[in-house]
Length: 255
Image 1 (cartoon, helix red, strand yellow):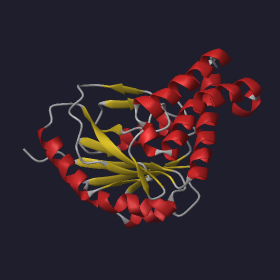
Image 2 (tube, rainbow, N blue to C red; image 1 turned 180 degrees about the vertical axis):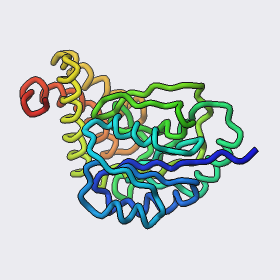
Image 3 (cartoon, rainbow, N blue to C red; image 1 turned 60 degrees about the horizontal axis):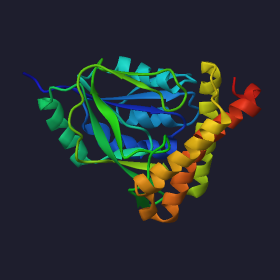
């Protein structure tokens, strides 16, 4: 039997500054597929330089544009990589070995998260970051939900063992970039809440602020990262509260 084909899928919007670094190691895949959402920069030319197949369009909902890529992929397995992530040769080699032998439908990949040049290992969580992501799946075994941010997932098949080699995720350039991300995420979440017709309550989201902060700073040992861990825990706690307040106080901006 021939080896399973691997599609590397990248969904991006105006990421010309980081796209080349992301795509270079993905040349080891059998297919590179790049979905460009409302892109106005030079991303297409960069993608085509790496032999990628490019799909362009406009999708306000994150889950929709990700599903476009999953449907268009031709590989037996799909590796999803964001433009701010880099796959090492060791990870690609491990993926090849896994897909040649795995009876499962999908696998998680560990993440090394960087703020600027600082590797931050502890404290991620509460919808503001993660230490592993379910990005390796068989074709047709994964669907993203129709949310603008942090879309839900529906799976076929069983979950396999987590891989050992990480993706390098350059999550924020600096603290200001982290705060801008909090603003973007909470705005998108406010739109999702309004679309669902349930924005929650202020007391419930105040409780979530406290529980999420505690989970990230204490439960996930963010305290080991000092000020960076404190910032991550604060952002994780504020994210649902800010989304609620935006939907409650300025609904006309997010409908």
